[in-house]
Amino acid sequence: MTVAGPMRQYQVVGRHKATEEHPNPEAYRMILFAPNPVTAKSKFWYYLHQFRKMKKTTGEILDCVELVEKNSRIVKNYGIWLRYDSRSGTHNMYREFRDVKLTGAVSQLYDEMAGRHRTRPRSIQIIRTAVVKAADLKRTNGMQYAKKKVKFPLVHRVDSGKRNQKALSDRTFTTVRPSTCFK
Image (tube, rainbow, N blue to C red; front, side, top):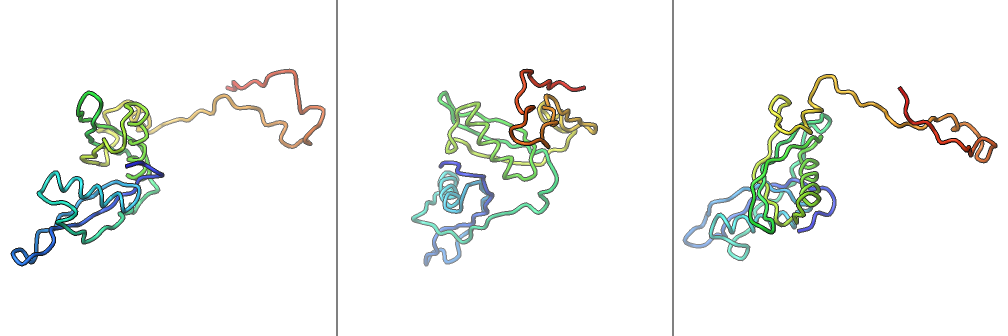
């Protein structure tokens, strides 16, 4: 699986195919993160084959729906529990991300795991996700934004005095570097 674009959240429901012995088999529901519904169905069969004695040829998909977050205007802290395979073995991990959507936090997770740990998307299994309160944050990167009086200083700005001049006036080019440290 490759991550092409942002991840999306899908709910996939499937079951064994109905037979004469079992006319109404038990249905299984899974919430998965995938870039498209085809990949979500593929991941559903991958995980279901591990948990139950069932595969795509002996089962059927009943429903595949994309889940959309209701309130995506507020920045939230997300905690993600995951498992990934590296060159040396399988590792469990907990990560924290800040985003307006859970799918955005999962996209950040895949990007960060590829950058920091060289992990392929097919090697990552998301176990659980949760919205974490600011008081319950464990990682220092998220804690610095959880304070009430967070300041974002505008450092290293270039003076915008030349914006209202003509393109090639005599003050377009100067021999002095701009001062970017303002107090």
